[in-house]
Length: 235
Image (cartoon, rainbow, N blue to C red; front, top):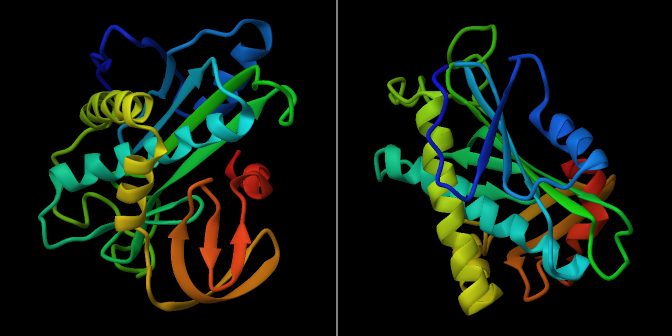
């Protein structure tokens, strides 16, 4: 793939196609925190990237950046797909188009999760452009950009678009707080307002999907699930 042209706030590192950008970013963070480091896997069939951030917030506030990241990823797809194809997010990891999963979000925190601030934070994104082996439509719960008629999009274009959308959401988060981030995420929450059944961290949950609250926890019926309880699943 061509090297993405990213805004000056970022430093780009390309890794081999089989390497996990999130794992690479975490390994780099163990020796030195490189705030704004973007790691992108060199592949055309899938966008796989990670962003390393040096948080200046307490762990609870730092985790909320994950939702700005989710909004940016959803905005990228919405900008390039027909408006009749709804882009939604399913807590905590899945990104869906018209109800079918097209990618996933990732989050990892370094250092003491309950300390004054995490040593580092890594945000990850994976989007399927072409898909893996198998016939198109073989798995109706999964899709790719090619199947959606957006095969002209490349990993390079998506990485560039995400980098701009994320900066915009991060700036809004810094200026206006978590409220607008939360509102945008909830507007795209898959199944919001409907009865649902989920299994999260091995725990079955049933009730009406309400979205995320002011602290970033998911609410289903009377149940509240904090984001920190699924960090291992997100990494």
